[in-house]
Length: 228
Image (cartoon, rainbow, N blue to C red):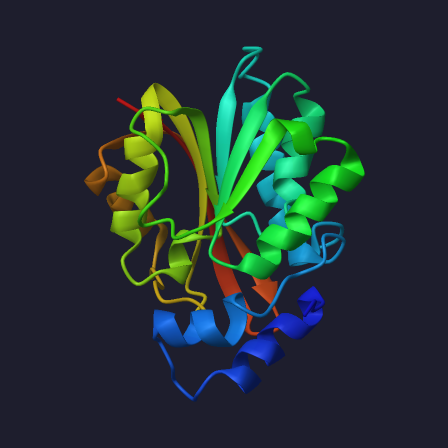
């Protein structure tokens, strides 16, 4: 089933038991059955936090000019961000992991439609147990992903594990955004920075900006980190 982004919050509220904060239930009710169409995913065309996210990523992609970079997109959804990077960097290759089989199927169709499918391999999986060897990737992205698991440090440690020494992580975690799918709700940007420090990532660039959506204000944080 595909849903539009402006239906997402109501879908969460109606399909989940009141007050649920259980990953298994959320997975069964939403991730196993739902995919967001690429043109709607997180309002990439007109949603201010998503546009800010894209600007942050683009700024740092310009610094990575190597021709043989392999990156991994965690929680890729319909694959919009993966597609964007592969089109911007025609010599790069990608892997991706998403908990939703519906998103995997949708993203694979999108990659084929855009002609980049030969440079990417998607799989269904959990970011807390990635199916890759240590020191595999030059770059890992986890955009609006870690808040969806109850133990974000475990997910972030997996990011560190699969990164090559000196590899980069670009991550985004919202602050003060307690919607039903969010199992980790940091209360301030300092809490997010502490999470990166606990994972032994060196933060090179960090941005925190307040936005207002239907449910109220929240803070979007973006980070570029390096595995030391």
